[in-house]
Image (cartoon, rainbow over the protein chains, first blue to last red):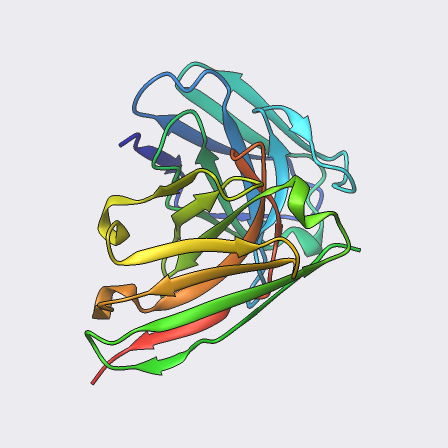
Length: 107
Length: 118
């Protein structure tokens, strides 16, 4: 199985700040990577697919980048509604696997 | 508007069976692969199974292979997950998801809780 390691596990940031979340795959996943946002008590929502493609309706302050085994999610100008847990997911191989999550809080 | 509404969860004893359903609307169900993803209490996300748009192909994680069966009825726009020989480690919220090209999950239901306990 491909292991997805996210860092940091938790993060505290101020409004307006830029935040970066990293995701490391145990092998090359050829940009077959998605990012999801899960707000407290809610279902996950797709933010990014194919490592850097923004899902329809997602604010442009979210962006994804990376290749090979290293990927990142960037949130520009952090808003209060961005408080959530973020997960990466690889779909290069079965079983589909997720990172452990990054919990983002406001400072 | 895409809607996925799960049903069928609850409390079940270890070793027993349970069937989850997911009613889909707002899109042409028969054009899309579908999947189940679960989340144990306070834990991360875990992919369970995927089915192709026509039901001809199915994929499972090893821990549920032989116990769970994913299926669909395109005439009823409904996805199913038959779960047999349930174990305590199957306790989780189960999400029905629409699966783009059998790869990533672009829409999620609200989730249904399954608790396996005696």
